[in-house]
Length: 69
Image (spheres, rainbow, N blue to C red):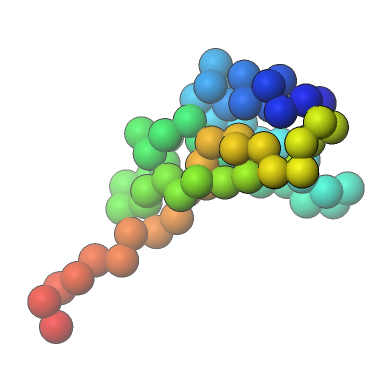
């Protein structure tokens, strides 16, 4: 699919699992509101039919909490 199509899916659904390689699937999100508690969204790029680096949205990653130690 094209970059616009892939981005459109993530934007319209809020979160989507997309195949990025023949045996690899990843979950991409529109923003951090689609991540679990104590997670945030980090920007992600994927290869699409028309772009080698399409800004698809983000992936959820753990927030490291600073306990003041």
